[in-house]
Image (tube, rainbow, N blue to C red; front, side):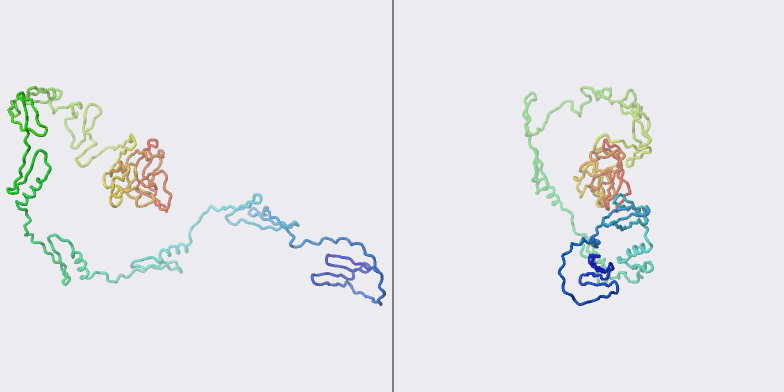
Length: 506
């Protein structure tokens, strides 16, 4: 009989008899189990004497390596192609080659693609349908009616059926003023006022107003003495040169005395007039204007000699004044003129009545076309202008030529600004000169401030106060309003013609 002991696992020992396993010993953490392979008979004989200790056997072979523990695994992550065009995978691979995939699938409106270990989802929806549902619209409109401040009407949003209930006040409440209330209101308007030559009294007891006019019998006329004293005071204490004025109150007269002016003359008429005096001359003069009948030397008038002895006849190139007179001599080239017609040159040798222009003293009538030419220099404004109102805050000195202004409710011109609706939506005009309320409302203008514009640019009210820009404002609540166009970028010339329409940005 042969008995062998062997290790079949890391924690198991087997005992074999004649090549057949009879017993197996398995070790656990806190126990040992014994397994009997088959029924055996064990013969127990009397214990014999202890034999000698045998020699130590050779070391047995190293047992096989047991399986790797659960905590010993490691994983790698990678991206791989999916099974379909709308799928890609994230793959987990452990250290023994086992794989596990996370499948990413593109839903409606999306596409999916892989590049290496990068997976990209892309929106493929082009339809941006944002139509609200009926319920959403009802809730929005209903909220607009809820919690408002109404007068003589109530509004209730019924979410259950999507309706808005409006109930108007029956207006049966009496809001009419009583007679007494009206009397007290009007009476108070006349009580305590400042009246001249009239007194007003409100009688609350009978609801009447009593007016009493001054009888005006008081004498308010100035007396002669009072007038004399007033005028006399006007002459008293004044600063006079070479004259003295004295008011005589006793007789109500004003005495005026001019300084005497001595003159020292020699026998031949030469002499000195004192610089501090004006002489009184008394000299007999021969041939004074009162007795003269002719000029000492004849003078020519329009080629005709005149010496004062006879009336003069004025001729023009040998003709009378009723005949046609050349332009060079002030003629019109016509014998009659149309009523209210304006005179213009005909391009040759005469001035004629213009058939397309008429002025009746108040109105200029133009039956032809009106042409506005381009300005020839900077700071020039050709077109329709107005002269009224005042500068910013009532100060004309705050007006700057070339800036954009608007007319406010006080008839003051303030700088226009697209940032403020009130300053960009009313009447607009360009300042023509500095420090004066003179403005152009339409026409051609050149100014150094119109820099950076290109011919053809559309021009807008700027968000910089008083400015004009070629870039439309984009800020919230900004006003977008066209004011004209650039007609000559090189010469900084614009055509100013503000639009009557504008857009306020939300």
